[in-house]
Image (cartoon, rainbow, N blue to C red; front, side):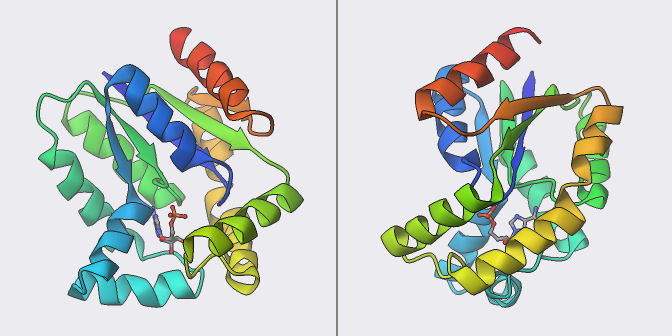
Length: 189
Ligand code: AMP
């Protein structure tokens, strides 16, 4: 089982690199952001709740997010592993993921931390907002999301270091070069 947590600030390239990892290793992909955006698009109750948080650049409450994740995880049959993209984002979520996997006789194989400087993140997200119309990719909301990242999500770096799962990845360069570094990290597991 290859269970990968792909980690990094908003705009660090988690989604892009996840697609390549899925293609190469044939594992399942959970992007919690994509799950929530699909709920919003479908006009569900969950979507309505999520939209309020997302538009403010805030995190969806842990208990709700953990339930959503457990549901998606259970929907995978005969899985070779999972790439977790955008989850966990808090220490509580990381603990819940550890427990959920342990209940299934599994564990996180590695946490890949895509490290990108703040000015580069801002440039990438503004560009993505212009290209895709993603409503939380505007300067004001991006700033809030980066504050939330530093206060609530970045502490996971030390958490995964203490679990012995942390792997730093230089997140600036060509897409191919970054992917090669990711593959090298996975191959040495
Ligand atoms: P993303 O597409 O991963 O950048 O997520 C977009 C937004 O969805 C975030 O800014 C949060 O509001 C929400 N979100 C996604 N994943 C999580 C999570 N694991 N915990 C809480 N909120 C989340």
